[in-house]
Length: 177
Image (tube, rainbow, N blue to C red; front, side, top):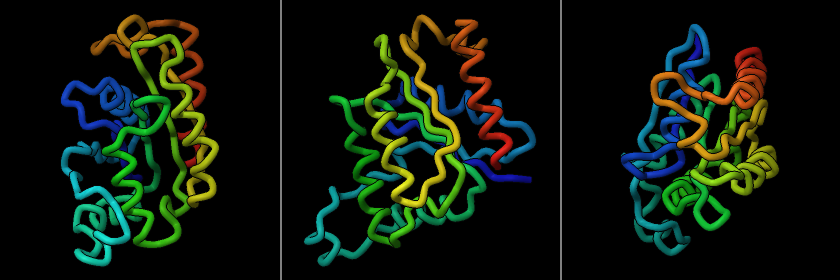
């Protein structure tokens, strides 16, 4: 059985992106899901001076081992000021010094959502356009606008057209893993 690594790129205990990542992972059939909580990966802010003084944190090494053991990766990005959250960026920075290939060529389904009408599209565009340079294989991407209006915790995506678009992307990812 395939292993899927999934997480919302936020440390909020009420993260709508964690909810979307879980929803997407649950839509993938016949897989084991490892749903991460980024709160388990808090570390000093990355700098080359800290790396020289303390080495690479065990949390970053553990995260990298999860990437290597996954058959596919689902990430839903929270957008902070049109960019990644500080928590994700820090984990990403620490992981990038372990080895050049950050994502190890794993198929990826990248998502974003927000309360607003663009649904985190700016941060999603950044990830989609750059992860290929870091050995990520972005298969699918989807932004869900106006989360509270278009998502129900019991039903999932409630807007018919958005659900169709999501299902199409989900099917592409399912086939790639």
